[in-house]
Amino acid sequence: MLARIANTLYWMGRYLERTEHLARYLRVQYFTTQDAPMSQNRDFVLGSIVNMAGIPWEEGKPFVESEILHAVALDANNPMSILSAITSARENARGMRNIISTELWEVINKYYHFVNNYPVSYFKTRGLYDFTLNAGEHCSVIRGYVDSTLTHNDVWALIRLGVHLERTTQIARIISCKLYDIYVLTDQNENMSVENYQYTVLLKLLEGFDMNRHHYKAAPDRQKTMEFLILNADFPRSLAFNLRQIQYFVRKLGLREHTPDSIGFAVGRLCAQYQYLLYPEIEDKVGEFVSETLAKVYELHGALDKNYFHV
Image (cartoon, rainbow, N blue to C red; front, side, top):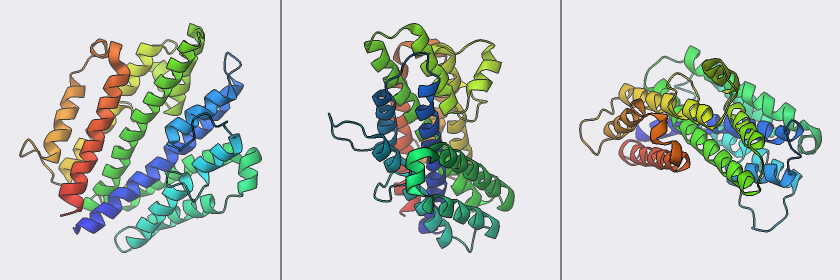
């Protein structure tokens, strides 16, 4: 397969996955203000959204809710917005129409038109929940069509590799952002119930609240949340699970670990670290560990880009 085609398919998967995490973060983080065990400062919530979405915001400048929500969701001038990501995904899919299914193209195109035609004024006033919920549902439908209408060959594997590498990136970013939020609240001398509520929010941001509760048979706290989202190899939105998926698709594409500087070797080494890691070993440095994982995932992308997509 041509490197250009491989790169296009890989990024199509990444862009689609990115939109789902941005939409879910917007919805869950914004609406937690209504259920919080404290009178949660709106600036705290908006600041968390700015931090996670990577929006450039001048230090000291007051947060403007409508501007921030629009920038994350529907701002065509923001390359990190949901609209920009789905536009790029659609362009990539359109260029690959001869090798992907018509059904997959149609659901991606439908998602694009939903986002592109969403009324900005309605979104800013009362459309946030509807928009973000529908965005997540579109992403779920698209993933279903990827798995059920494509031959499970290199085309499928490249899309899925992009999905899982982006998901790993977003999981790590979301965990890091919430750990920072918790640090801010702790610095403001908020009590333990407020901190534990943020772990509930974090689990909901990754749709893991119910499964965490079933797994531990107890309310979330720091250990249960971090152990579950970082090391549980059976939960689809944990770091361990998605690193293993990256390894699977790297092998599926024939990028095996023949030499220490190969992509397969790097991802295999990272997976092995996670496989035999116990939570007490990282308990005192969770934030640092997640940041290190994120840096290694960026390195994996760089190696893919250099050795596979631009050869």
